[in-house]
Amino acid sequence: MFPSVESSFPAFSTKFEGRIPYMYLDILGLVTVGVGNLIDPVEAAQALPFCFKNRAGISTPGSPATQDQITQEWQTLKNTPGLATKGYTACEPITQLELSDDAIDALILGRLVQNEGFLKRQPWFQNFDAWPADAQLALLSMAWAMGPGGPGGFPNFRAACQKLDFSTAAAECKMNEAGNPGLIPRNQANVSLFSNAAMVIASGAQGWLAEFQSLLSANIIGGRPRAVRVVKRRVALEPRRPLVDNVQTAFECKPHTPQRALVKKLSD
Image 1 (tube, rainbow, N blue to C red):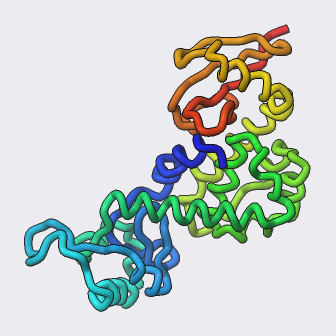
Image 2 (tube, helix red, strand yellow):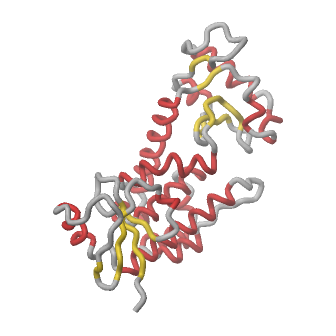
Image 3 (cartoon, rainbow, N blue to C red):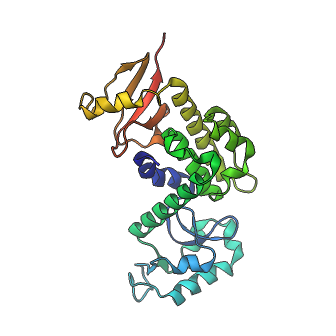
């Protein structure tokens, strides 16, 4: 994945999942933590560096939890299935353990990289590295919500992705929202991202990417927003802005830099 996708993903998914340091039950009754990270079965929770919360009533705040203590808290939630319909806040007062911010960041990155690897082994997503960044972010978003095997289960969607037909992918990427209204805004974001990717492909941006990279390498275009005319297209640099916040088409313009190019069709 492009560096901008990796760096943008945590904030992108936090908008839909929240960022919760303690264990809670998701809408399906599965134990979860972080940014929608499932830790069910219990072995997944035992592998994480949970510590005791720093709050009144806890005798050893900040101290590492043992596997037995992690298991006990996990089981307490699992034995209270009614919490699944009450939201994560209902689990805060009955939990004593939490993850640090660094631990959550590591958990997100580990799962993101794992999902990417699985997706790229599928024939319909094997050209993932050459996709516009918006399409990469959208597919990873689907995999985060469904599991990495989920997107490949949509025949029309996967066929469209294999052909780089991101307009059709936008129309076919909707995940089932029944009983899970939290998927509604994620579905909407995914449609926008795939639609953006279709605009990138249609603009011919991928074809002249190397030319634009050479301009960057020569420092012809600096860090401030500027513009360059290439085949009646304008490319405006917007450093360090999350892709999801841009309503225009966004794609990675140079690997290993924080800059992305926003492609806008000029009027004839």
